[in-house]
Length: 75
Figure 1 (cartoon, helix red, strand yellow):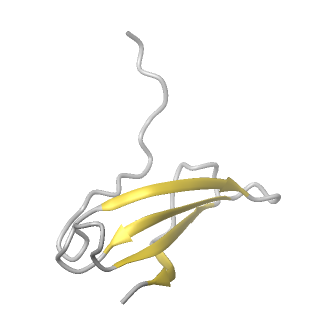
Figure 2 (cartoon, helix red, strand yellow):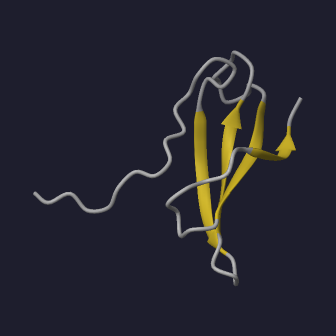
């Protein structure tokens, strides 16, 4: 089977970020793409653990992405 597409951003969990969850893409009128997603922070990956809504932006149709920016944080 032919492989379609490619991975341009891998948000793997790590120390202080035990998991990432649901996300959504939005295309802006100027052509940029925004990706918002649930990012768990701290050391608990449970549904009631600390988390934030993070977002990243791409200026080149998803080829590269900015670093995380925090939109909203629970604590």
